[in-house]
Length: 453
Image (cartoon, rainbow, N blue to C red; front, side):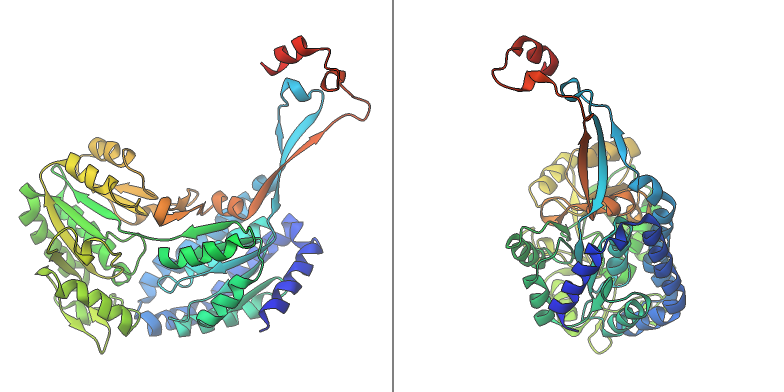
């Protein structure tokens, strides 16, 4: 596919005005939903081949969330696109004022490999509902999923409206040389900087969904069995290859040993006596990632877990004690099933430690609810759960996004619609009205001061 020619065809299609029609947008959302039904089994098969992801986990973390997102947009799109009348301020009376949402235009959506269906198509839902055209870039690290997605998109939509591309860095580089009206990128902070730098040359707005080290605090007052089960699940989900997975664990010293015992028990409940044999445990995406994640185990003291098999890209869920707070496992995003554990005695020290680091994409607190609510309010992060992990992303109709190094902008539900829209103010004055106070020689300054305050 010729990238420049595809983008030009999308610009022409957008200029035709077809995407401005709300009925057209709803029809395209239904087409996407129908395509998911038709291609669902092939997507499951591809996810299993690339990531050893079970059908059940794939539905819960990708297809199910995506379907819910489409349903939300279909139900709410009419109200989102409706012009909003604004009561005019005295300075502009008798004019009327309204706010109109219009599509930004041609979007580029770049997806990662860890949730390759959800993180490509969920932003697309926002692009469709806002009235944009879109170029989708799949991840080459999951070739089976990428192939299925590209075929599904090409069969469902004309390339002048929505096109999907595969390929490696050279394709990314060529795409980022082009001028888009918005770029939506999900990936690592390092690649986010590359995307933002490229977008700056065209003054293109960006939404960056990045990552970082998401802390998980287990305080006194926590239900240790329930906490351990939720943390073990949140870390082992997709073999830890989740941007909002708990990335380091801080446990009060008085409950550390009991928590560790509960964590081990929870893993057995989730995956059986031998996690290697579980059909529900994902594999690491490739050997390069395997070696990086294993290095965190090798440089730390193993508390539990630690088994690795490079041939099958299997790494067991592993608790480790870091050598010190400056070690790589405490400073680099792990993006795998290794969870460093440090103990604490003062929650205030925990607060200071987290505040001294880049703002995380997620934060988790286990303990007394009101204490947890106060704790997460006191720190910047993309999103938070008190006495749970991961589940805030499953909540429809609320924004998801990072802050600082963990990203900029947000999406999901109405926020997806707004991410791809421009809110335009339109003032309409009666044809014969013409207030004299705004013209020189400004004889009515006392009146103007009264009006403007």
